[in-house]
Length: 200
Image (tube, rainbow, N blue to C red; front, side, top):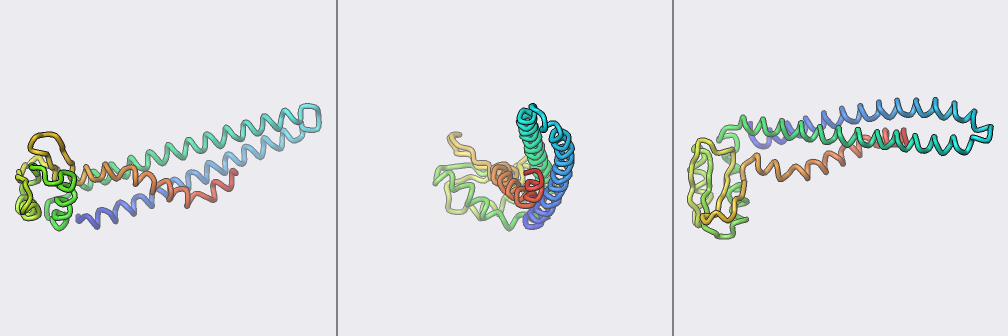
């Protein structure tokens, strides 16, 4: 599976997860709204006596507590969704063979070595990519070491051990996690506005 196909698969899965969370949030909002409407109706009758103001304050506090719980559920669901997306991406990365992403090697090597700014380094890669990594690193002060245990992508280490740059696909995915969390939150927020209005 190529990198583009991997990204497309992740995007489809993220959209499916977002839709599921949106449905769950709307169902939760509807349940909460129905409960609140029933409670407000009961308490409205009590508002005719001297306890009316206290009942309204209690109702407001309970409504705020319901909204807080709904938000907490949405945040937990979002975190769980992101965990599932990352786990799926890691599994797909683990299934990649060198030819699946060989065309990305020059960009990976350049991006990884950018952090070392000409420092003598060792680039570790899978044996099938050794020639491509050597070609991409030509003219730079690096040694290329092929290792059967290397993760897909490249990992660079300064010769003096001072810096390690994880340019593997899994390392790059880990660095993207915060951006993915922001994008997922935005997607859920945009798709879940109806649910927010229902309880607001």
